[in-house]
Length: 197
Image: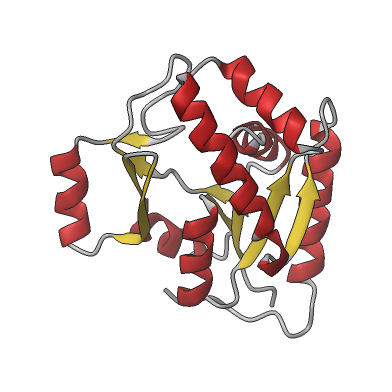
């Protein structure tokens, strides 16, 4: 029997994690894609319950007090948390579960579920990452400087991830294929173990 995997997708802001997950959903609708709860404002093209679960700070802290998050963190002044229930249900149904999370959160999840598969998404270069961030036009100059400094720090931590995949510009399909190959390879390893949360 093949054990389902908890796959953590992480990397710096602007590296393309959302675009990658969108393509993974198309290629593998049978996988489960966790929806992270957040207190940050919704962006123009986002949908509540699909991109994120948008909560007030009071709602977020109520769930936190009830120990409803697998992992939670404050990032850029906003709170994020991965609801435990949805991950547990997916794994219990023998479904691979994907979680998109920041590097700090990935480390926390690995400490709780040591068999989780951590995949770091890297940009082709820091200069390209900066271009992508500026193209989004979602941040002030000060916020942009913070994101770039954070990205440098996160990229320095990529070595403790199980795999690193470079998301080259205009090669999203290649990135998705690499991720699916990594997941298949990990799942077919004889020593692959189940995850308990």
